[in-house]
Length: 557
View 1 (cartoon, rainbow, N blue to C red):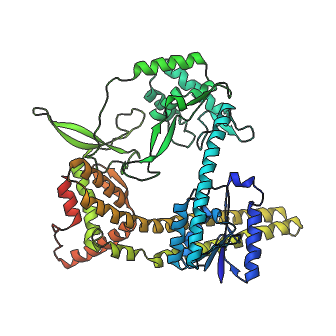
View 2 (cartoon, rainbow, N blue to C red; view 1 turned 180 degrees about the vertical axis):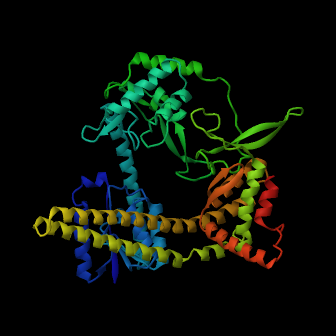
């Protein structure tokens, strides 16, 4: 029997005796050896699927996702873990994984606990233990938060993934340290704003100089406004201002799916003199006065429900987003018309001359693309056929490619090691070693990029199955949704995001677009079919009143 060994450790677990990755690995390898099982792992240069520093409440773990991919491709018969909470600490996730393992015909076993999925008693015991693991995780969360509060009060940075612009995070001291080059820019930003320059003018200044942000992009208004309002540049830490409300879902349910809300002022913690300041209190106060004075008092209420392609439309010329805007089309009666306009138009330091386009005009072009999909495989009404198009065979091709590339990468690494040994033993000269080593490193770099590309294709292929299931749920909600404009318009926007990844516009025309799978595959087949029909001069089918596309278009409008 082929078994896959999975190990995981989080920061909290690392301090516990017996939870180290090496302990788990050695124990599982010996356990499998005692039973005469063959150990399988598709990750190069590893014999176990290992996630280092990942919480048991997080399903987005690299090795775990690779484990699932291999399980779906029938690479092993059993999954073996050191303890059950190594797999997950959330009961809901655990039960979902066990159900999927069962459907795939893959067994599950804990090496240090009498739990497996081969009997009903074992399944019940797993569920009971899963409840205990979830309870322990909740207790961990309760202990972590007070620890973070203590850390903030000691001046330790408890921020997000990146330190604020102008600072770097020191892992040893757990505090912020000034980054000289960025700190100078921060000082200049405050000075320019105090001298009377607006945030767009400051953005234009750095755009003209070619100074990129930390992520390599250009400076923008929101980024500068955040800098000008932040107290971190006074040497203070302000923590717990906002949080995700897990009891309140966002409207579309994508991403985290939770609303990001402000905490009560009593819950916000502010600690002064925690790190070196970049600006003075006087400069900060003067800037806040200017920001308050320059802020418009008019409340702009923008109804975005009629812009079904917002967030998808991109400018092919400058790369900016196309945003919805209402334009008066008849001043006598005050009639307005919906348009999309490039967000860079009007910004002096960005030279973009791409034209605006009416919502009706561009949406008609988008619907023409959807019609090609519909006429090919009846995507919206025959979802079982669409699911069949994304069966394991197309994915297996990519998995085979991935295995081939990983084998080549392993051979490349072995060659580099062998070459270094020859050089260290003075069997080849320095010049020859440099030439061959450089060629091997270039090949290694290319293989790693190829592996990443194939991995992305596999993920996209797997995600396409999730998209199809999402469409099934979407259509059920669509039929049950009340026929009010706002509800239908929201569903229309959701529908467009299910079909399209991105649409690029040039001179009021769609010049490029990217579709989600399996719709991309359907469109490609549809264009081939249309070309054949054009050659045969056969009239195309008309859109029936029972078509979901027809119902969506007419009912929303």
